[in-house]
Length: 395
Image (cartoon, rainbow, N blue to C red; front, top):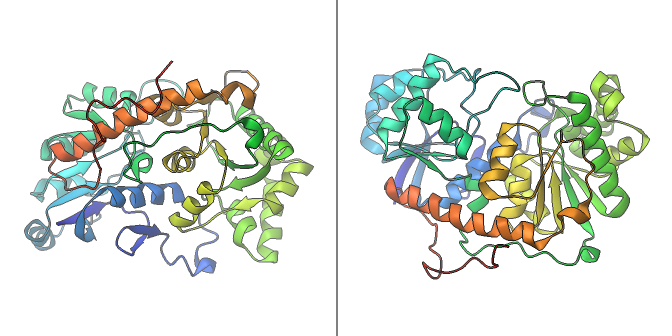
């Protein structure tokens, strides 16, 4: 099997293809540090698609010709963990210099572009160079959706394949499909939180947060709700911290102007203190979503983890990333800025999820073909029949 390198890992690997945060057991060392555990979802999921016997990191912070020559001799290819790399502020360190010396193919699967709230996306020359080097090293470059493909095409990079995200395919099941139970059978619901946001991502912060709050409270009024955090410090402390750290977290939230004015109220504070979930271990999120009847909310990879395990999910879109994912997979989605109320009954419609089922089968095939095209030994099974229909017909 292959010996592989990764650019930009996000966590430590254990038991061959499982990921958890660095020094995860030493919670005190990093409970005050923000890291998006959703990045670890993608890393973990990527490994679960691949057949490999050895894994190591390709360092891009320095250029050591001796090290690079050794890696060229000992490894088969490099993969770039899927993430939001194509944006104006991206810092590639010394990646361009490293890649110029590297003789291995670089497999980028599931990378994406981030559109600014207004104006045209402007990329640095360094970003353009790195993307062209990656494109030129392999048969094709995998992106999450049509917008990212368009951005690369404008750079003259045409060997692009739309492959979604590895997280969707982590079970290596080409037949996966969402089948909705009657809504009255739904008891346990997860809400994926993203309280911290910037004007780079959201065009109207007040609307973003108040709509977020309304969603959480509406779900809590109807169901046994779990609030699913993915990295914000205060939420982590409320889920896992000591009594003192939990008090510190609530005090910090009450001092935060946006949270105080547009997000918190008495009910939200109670939910935050009693219904919060966070973990530094990807497998614990997977266990959680497998026990839920529905997951919905603002987190791109938290929602996708649910769908990958057959749990219905609804996206709340607020930027180009979330819109692009929902479009690639035809996931039922709510535009946070559409000035419309959200009614779960309007989305609890099998026809909506039939569209996801069909798109999932199609993009699964595109991801498998992409890996095959690049000579990447992988675990992605073929459908039982090449001409098989999706589990349900699309209306």
